[in-house]
Length: 213
Ligand SMILES: [Zn+2]
Image (cartoon, rainbow, N blue to C red; front, side):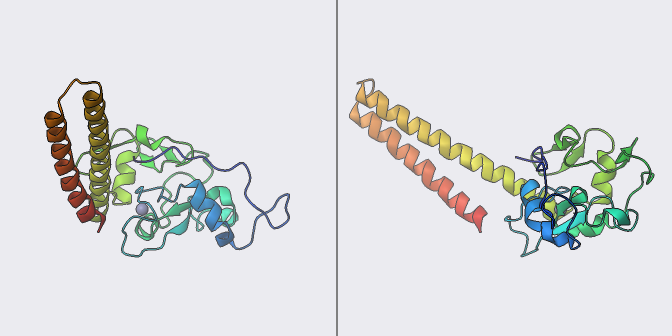
């Protein structure tokens, strides 16, 4: 549900067909968005989730200010929501000559290499807890537990629970039908179960529609 493992495509499009980068890095917007599964690689918000109309942006993972040669390199581009992009800004606490993206407790996770689920744990209230370095640094610098994002994660958890409950009702409904068909239960009991399940289904639909607004 959170922080899927991402992988980059083998090859990004290029103006020459066989190599080189587009001078305007925004040409890679669609490809990067697809590779990032249309999620902010930092807070994990989805582009289509209710974000007040925010348009996601291309972030230079290694900031342009410190790595100007990577400005148009698609391998350095990630998708970010405007707030995370702003919070990250030019932060890059690791030495510029280092191939690492974090050292000890300081730095950033590489969303296409590090499995972020090894570093972050999401509580039932939507709060991100740091499991190991440098997660605490990332949470702090990017304000990943800002109320809007905690609510968004909580919302996603609730929607997932409601979908699971819909599935469970369908299973029970099929079970009741099968039990009636083989004579395990009488028609009265079958109808009683069906009515109970339909009531549950109606209640869930109300919750679903409220959460979907
Ligand atoms: Zn974000």
